[in-house]
Amino acid sequence: METPCSLSAKFEGSFAYYTVKDRMPQILTKVIDTVHRNKNKFLELHGEVSECLPPVSEYDVFRDVKNQSFFQSQQAILALCSHLQEIKGKVNVLSNDEVRDEIYKLVQVSLWGNRCDLSISGGQDNSQKTSILSSLEDFQAFILVDDMNSVWNILSKNRDGNTESRTRVDIVLDNAGFELVTDLVLADAIMSLGLATEVHFHGKVMPWYVSDTTKHDFDWTVQQCLAINNKWMSKCGQTWKENLKKRRWVYHEHLFWTLPHEYCTMAEVAPDLYTELQKSDLVFFKGDLNYRKLTGDRKWDFIVPFSQALRSFHPAPLCSVRTLKADVQVGLQTGVGERLTATDTDWLISGKYGIIQFSPVV
Ligand SMILES: [Mg+2]
Image (cartoon, rainbow, N blue to C red; front, side, top):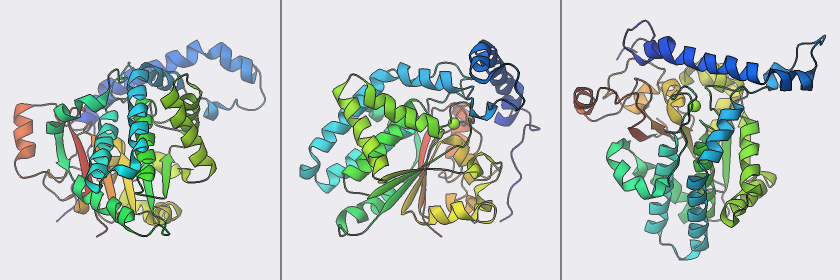
């Protein structure tokens, strides 16, 4: 089968078209406003007249909104952290099925956490105000692809296996704020329930797509949880800090994630990163941008198998956990895409629908 052409803003009515026409000006205006409002703070730090360029690269224009998203989601974060501590309290008495159910729940939480994206809202408040846990059942009908069984088959091998072996899960992160906490909670549960011995996170080297996670956001989030005046949340923060210190959790950054390449070129363009991912037993790819790059942002037919749309990108078994915010989607059952297009015109871009889509190494 021929590889379809790339999605582009030249197609009127497409999401790319709407992005260039409406979203980009909105985001840029916010950036200019933020820089202007913080001008004095910035000059105080770096001096008005400087022979060198001030370190603009260290200045994250999106930091304020990311931090706001974290604080405004605090009730939901509290609920999630206490749920996690509850699970950890009964680790030894949970049956295999119960462990599977708990992990499935937290993958879904991480999925819907991906709705809280500041780019899609043009930087407007998009925090999570209520506990997602209590809404999971209502949301289930909106999961268009659910390959959780395949994900569980991989994770459960580690639980049954001998305790000597090392097993590794990777999470390629998307947004800071509430979503990042859902990813940290999932990572913690995966390790605590004996499904992996190490988790590796991958973030952006520079502020990107408004709310995308940088190293600073990652450390800041762990530190905020640790310092907060709540037993369960600070317990989480403590564990996470300890995990990082003991290298059970490893944070990686790589320029490739902020370059415009489709992931099928990774082995060629960034062989070191590809080799790193090959060490993993399961790689989660969070969010829409990762999905677009996994599938090359092309006009694929809705029913093309995910593994085929990945083309040559098969470093390890992988799973995309993404709410739909751009007009590319593969691996649907025949007729589903057409039915949705007829009944819900925004289905590809509204963030209302989600997928947990798996591909083995082929
Ligand atoms: Mg993002």
